Image 1 (cartoon, rainbow, N blue to C red):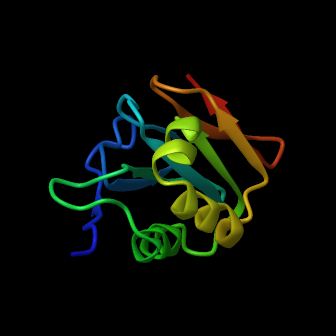
Image 2: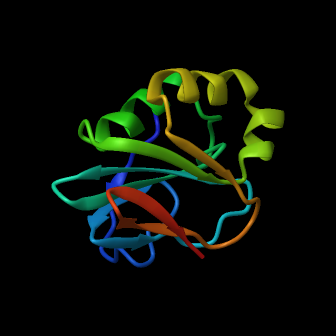
Length: 126
């Protein structure tokens, strides 16, 4: 069963399998999660990705859905527990990288992250 993504009610606390769009966004805490972000209409769109939902592991189809939520945004980035994804879902993470073609990858591990636009690029926030 594919992941279901919902629009966040608070772009300063985008939770697991939620997405949001604002001048600045923040995800809720990552513990093995990653976020993808891109710039669209001079705002940051972010999607909070998990390795699993309640019953299923992340798939390439889930990645396609998440990338679709970026709405063709520019300068995509990946942030968060990248090493956990490489270890636990290496082929899916590689599919994400190959499909998204991120400008930057910020392998910060567990924590609370987000982004804002500075000089036309997404600047990570912690």
